[in-house]
Image (cartoon, rainbow over the protein chains, first blue to last red):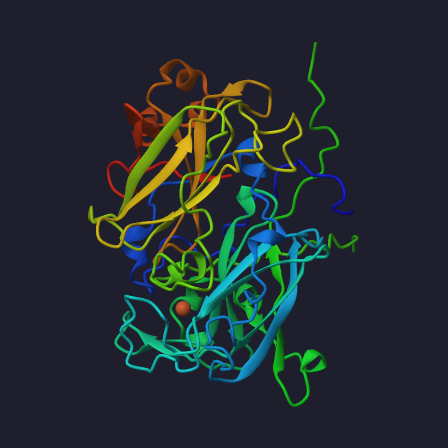
Length: 246
Length: 205
Ligand SMILES: [Fe+2]
């Protein structure tokens, strides 16, 4: 199936056992921020199966290059140079053409450029820590950055976030809207992180761990990590518009 | 053995965390010069947009009644005639001067989110009945593991709300008012309660 015709089917039901539950007391902030009552279930209507489309003019030339998009002219962010690339797919395996992907991260020392960030690691004057891109017609996307550092956070007395990049993704329908995080292969902090552990299924956690991709690593320049993102699939509309009865 | 279905699994959600602003609204957090403006900020209409101008204001409260100062809210809505500006809108074309999507971070002091928009028209439900005018909301924040989906209807649409097929699905009728924005003049106030007696109705949709 190609994305040539606009699709108007509802999305597959979300597997709520695969996603983290709202209430996950190991991550303390969820305790008072998790709805306690059952969600009202509904097959998608026009209001959820439609969604905004962002044109390529939304994006600036250097938006997908975090090594230079905040740096002074001629300078670069400090850290391990990496390429992050992959596809935005839906559950049918179809590339999500034109998906807007936004990302943000800490610098190489684990420090975010944010008013409310208090970690003592140094700020990098040449690193903003965010970017965005629009996937191509096959759902393929890429950006260049530095590998973020792990950082401590106030939850348990000694909790550390594994190195990670936050992702915000738009598909073709507002019901596909997703925020998630990408982790790096081999990081021992992944398996002891209270936020990672909100995801109940180990198989699901693995879907968020990007492997080192030596085939796309650029010799003498930067290593590559491959990260595919899967959004909800859309149902085919074979019988959707047929009136019932009389 | 049977044939494999070969469907992929959706990527599991993770919290937006406390620094979602860096990625989604950098200018709001004081990082200028990379993006000209924050995506989804400012009025959602221009001079040529059809429809009645309204302002939606609200706050998000946790289970202790404390206002969230780090939430991010997005809205998606139809134009004044009930058409969405989306390729999946198959019934007709929407007002070209209305994009229909907005994004607003909660104010870091007051926790308030504000959308300057237009009142949407009615959109048909799956069976063709009309839904009452409504705005779709998506809420993320630190401590929210998967984005929350809800809707805001309008208090000045009592008759349409009474016929709305989605509101009709809500068994506990005392909860319906949690989805109704209170309209006074051009302002519609819509507070969201994550927990407690007035917990907002959230959807799995
Ligand atoms: Fe983070």
